[in-house]
Amino acid sequence: MVIKEGLLFEFLKYMVNRCYCLLIPDYRSFSVEKRVKKMLDSYEEKFGYRMDINHPKTYTEKIQWYKAFYTGDGHLDRIVDKHLFKQYVKEKVGDGYTIPLIGVWTDVKSLEKDWANLPEEFCLKSNVKYGGSWVEFIHKKSEVNFKKKKWEWAQWLLYKWSLINGFTVAYYNCTPKILAEQYVENVKDQLFDYKVMCFDGQPFCIEAAKERFGSDGPSFTFYDLEWKKLDVTSGHHPNEDIPHPNHLGEMLEIAKKLSEGFPHVRVDFFDTPEKLYVAEMTFFTGGGYSYYEPQSFNIQMGELFKLPIESQEV
Image (cartoon, rainbow, N blue to C red):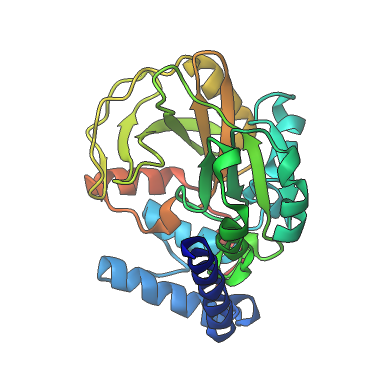
């Protein structure tokens, strides 16, 4: 009876959320002016002032312009999509630098059909979500109640709950998918996340994260390219010492190649003792809503961030 109640609850939650999505506006149908106004409203609510979209100065301000207009000559969707970006990385730096893909699905019925053939341990994730959400590590597949979990995973395919339905035009041509990747861990069961901030193809600094998928949220610590800790914090996240990457030189070289041709991109890595992986490429860090202390760091990154702003004004 408990199992049936659990199944019913998950199904009803899915149906309620699916119906709720019908009430959420589709941002892709908005005019540029309307979408930018709503985005600037959000920024003002967060930071307490109205920024000028045509003359952004700080890093967080320029991220807003980036979200509203930048599409990388129309091909950015194949990089922000966590599935398609694997092929992009392969083309730029060679094979073997992304976590091996086991499968990809656009509906839960297809996932259910393939479930028996999946390994006992793997990682499920959305291709169009951020911040470690919509990621689930399956350690014992044989103990998973698929009929219950599938309704939760089906919500990952509701595009209005994803980055597709927001202020960021680069996601507008993406299709929601569920990915299964090989499970990767380091010797201490702690997978660190190293994020290389790049501007115009040049690495600037490294934002290192610990407990990326922990219940209490991650800690973020900033380092220069020689792994000297910077006196910078991001929001209320703890600022803890992070181990020196095993493959720092290789990490910076790959970040340089992958960031070539973009005004700004953050190249994220998982660095295990055995191998370096490119986790994703992030163009819109924190949605441009991160608090940086000191403020001079936000200003400094803004000065490095050269936008093609003459190509688009509102």
